[in-house]
Amino acid sequence: MFDVAIIGAGIIGCACAYKLSQYNLSVALIDRENDISLGATRANSAIIHAGFDPEPNTLMAKLNVDGNAQCKEICKKLGVECKEIGSLVTAFDEDDMKTLQKLLENGRKNGVPGIEIWTKEQVLEREPNLSKDIIGALWAPSAAITNPWQLALAMAEVAVVNGCKPILNFDVSSIKRENSLYILSNGKENVRAKFVINAAGVFADKVSALVSSPTYKIIPTAGEYYLLDKSEGNTVSSVIFPCPSKKGKGVLISPTVHGNLIVGPNAQIVSDAEDTKSTASGLAEVREKASKNVPCVNLRQNIRNFTGIRANSSVDDFIIEFRCENFLDLAGIRSPGLSSAPAIADMAVSMLSEKGLCLEKKENFIDKRKKISFKHLSESEKKALIEKNPKYGRVICRCETITEGEIIDAINSPIPPCSVDGIKRRAGSGMGRCQGGFCAPKVVEILAREKKISPLDVLQDKNGSYILINETKQEG
Image (cartoon, rainbow, N blue to C red; front, top):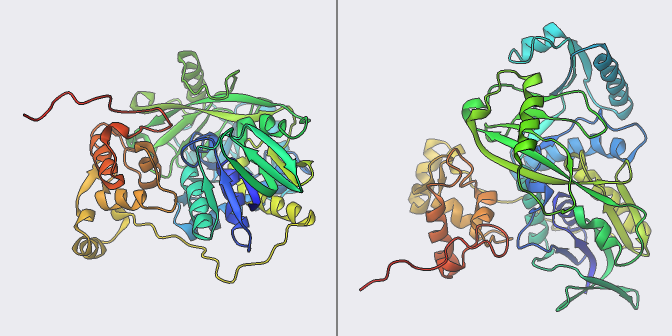
């Protein structure tokens, strides 16, 4: 039995686990998948937004700026890559400039620091590759980029080290209320908890409907992206947005923390919340819209396309409310959800406290994690590490300089991965130009060896995504 059960191990669920693990509580982090952050958290723009876009007095406005500052602090503390590079929202005509003025007013009311409108000359001085047709832009220096799945994993790992129990491969199919406890079932096993947080992303309305009729509807919205090679990483030095529309913030162009360039997304409502295929028409739309802001962007240097599903909803704000007694919905958490995650978690913890959850701070809370990044060490540090453990001297992923030692560290992490992509999210192998073309077979070999399983049982990512079918050669 748990004090709190969190349904959904994306960025919001992981942030809640991280915050709750600071107290003397028993917490379960539950997800239907075989790993952390397999939904929208691993397929988004990776932007920590400044906070000028939300309308003042909304939950988005209230939580974005606070979350922005907290994300940076947590990234620094837990060794997650984060770079404060600022953002520009571009204007091409006077109507766009009026929109920028409105965003400027929003930003100032929301408490966004350093926000201002730049002239064409100022914009092109910072970003010479932008279209010469631009007449101005909104500059927000506090915008940043990060690694979203690493941030989720880091918070979840710290939570687990501090006693939180991860329960994966648990698809909640029914929820019953019995003797002041919620009984969550997947049809085979049960989890009991006094309080429940519903952070199920695109499935939040379906989870909420298991206890009461929700007052909202999740509208799964697909966004398609290009990820360009590092040779294109310096095309722009800031996050570049077009003027926003009702569909969202539009097709952005931004560096990534790994040195690549990301371009996207579009916005297409889909009926299947798990339909992450990329389409020719969608990618053509992204190409056309991106080239308006940055005509020279070279999409031929694409190394991967991917699609994320956003949890848009019928409510034009975050949905943070009790669905019924001690059952808290955190739903409709679309952009700026990543930016707001720690602040959303703070609000959730406070609301649970008001309902009777006892918050007693831990005296021995461990607010750090150990993570070795070999390529970022000095030469003397590398030498000392290899002398201590020769496996750090064997480079497995040449594109990203990821060593066997780092892959083994990932396998032995607080939330052990069960797939090649799980290793990729933790260690970074397969993130480079070849996208695992050379290193994946070695990662399969190491994963099978360390977990003492057959290579035939190694997954690419989600359950059922087997890489190998059978042996083609036999000895003798």
